[in-house]
Length: 170
Image 1 (cartoon, rainbow, N blue to C red):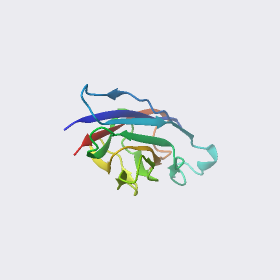
Image 2 (cartoon, rainbow, N blue to C red; image 1 turned 90 degrees about the horizontal axis):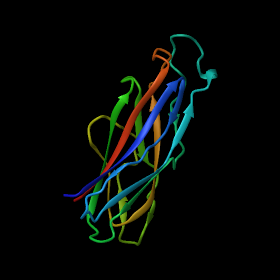
Image 3 (cartoon, one colour; image 1 turned 90 degrees about the vertical axis):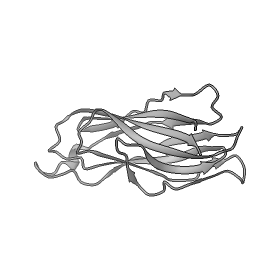
Image 4 (tube, rainbow, N blue to C red; image 1 turned 60 degrees about the horizontal axis):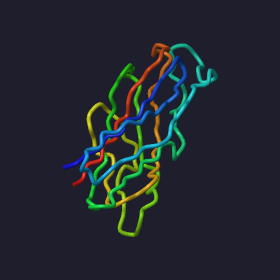
């Protein structure tokens, strides 16, 4: 079973939420499948969202529908694959939740390539969990993020967590 991981980083700074996604990969020498992740997200919570001390911010903070693009290069062996997602906290407040979903099918190389699942929001936790599955090569699979449960009760400081995507041949 071969796998490749990619990393993404999310920051919460003061009452600002810039999400900076850093990429790094572990690619086994003989791997026939690779995952590529591109994109970044920067978000600031407007001061107008703070209506009264002790109340939570209004709304859920959502990235664009194509904030991050994932490409799976699985040309040689064309195995079925799964993409798992998890986060690795660096400096994170456990009250803040990060959610993600797949907002499209990307660009399949041909009619035999496909992706399935991951179209409903799921909370990204510190444990690996199935995000979506697929077959063959597909480029630019769009991902949208949400930040939830941001509150004025959370200390205003920098928060950082890394989102890790792992692709595994099935």
